[in-house]
Image 1 (tube, rainbow, N blue to C red):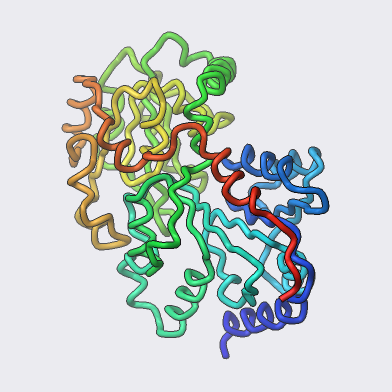
Image 2: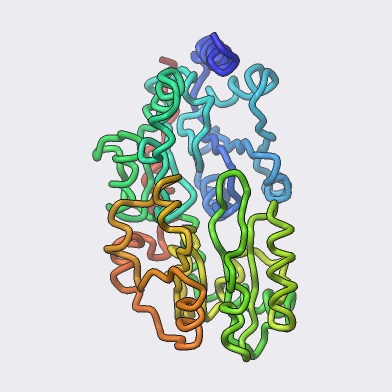
Length: 388
């Protein structure tokens, strides 16, 4: 038995020992900070006697502190013996367990009939492959593959924003179609809220006044496994192809060197905005340049979305590892830009991207009312249950 298997054995043991607890709570596992509105709505809608508990990854400590200040119980989540001894007993009080990501410990968790485990995920669509669709998964050991599938099998339902995303989970997690719930992603509601968008724009302009009065070009490529990224030759010149525009570069925080190089090459046109999130910048961007990032699905929901450009300079190698959706080229809302010259031409042309079919495929239920539907779907039938 290796270390991972022993850890899952401990999780299984503790969850069995505490599995007879009364399940009257909602537990939320939080890796991402963009579902705060849903978390607060769940807390407000819970019936008397029930409680919402949030387990958060250390990177989300600031958000967790805000939730705690509002009376929501929060616990930092790190895999280890402490979590087994103190966290698992709390999780076993859950009538509903919401997850916004893949959590390995679930593979060992005792799953009683009175607990519903729901996958909320953290992206409205998928360009990259994951799960069984990731080519590297089939190269893993048989024991690793069993562990992966054990996690996937624990999810009773998947909240998705479209049938297309449901189909991705069916392929990627080997999940049956009857587990998919097309309720919309609560995290997308704010992008459909004109008041939130306007307030966010004003905050962005206040924090980064250099963007006011200019075309804003946001370059936001995906995170690449291994945190390696070498800007292609000519990228900075392409991003600067419109001399009147201002360019904001948002790379993964670990890519400080690459970001610094791009900033230096872009010169006066680059605007540094470390205090503003990528989602906030989407509200002021006229052009978004990305590759395989889920930022495309968010941007397409905004009324200011003008041009969405897919700069896939490494498509052949990326297709091999980690892989892209097999029908990607059929539904991208625009041509694949493979060279810096093609990117520069697209930026200069500044043509509006028709996002109608793209949204019809991926944002079917992301209409601004997903939070209400999710809360209604899960909490109107929320009742304390007898111990299993």
